Length: 108
Image (cartoon, rainbow, N blue to C red; front, side):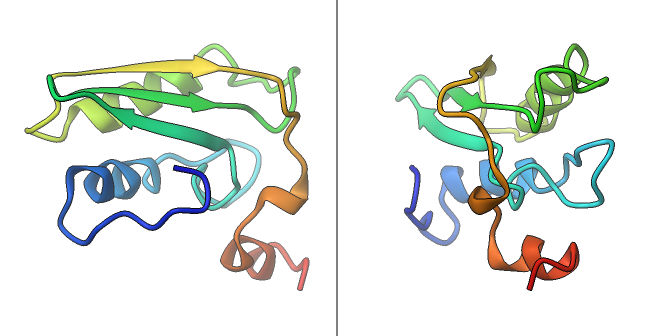
C-alpha cells in the first residue's frame, strides 16, 4: 500500500476515504495525510487490516484512536470487519506527511 494510489471507486479507495475522516486529536490533519497509516490489506472476505502508528507513544488518544479508525472503516457497507494494529517500527516522523499535510501545518 505504501506509495500506491488506490484505484478510483475501489474498496481500498473507500477505506482511504474513511481514514481521511479520522483526525489526530492534537494535530488538525487526518491520520492518512499525516502518514500514520503504514499498510492497508483487504482480504477476499472483505476483512480489512490496517497497520498504523501514532505520532508519539505518549499520545493521549492512544487507547481510543484505533477504535475510531475501526469504526470509520466498518461504516463502509462492503467491509465485513476491520482490525487495527498499532506499531512503533518504523517510528513516525514529519517526513511521512503528505505535501498537503505539510502545507496545512506550515512545513512548506
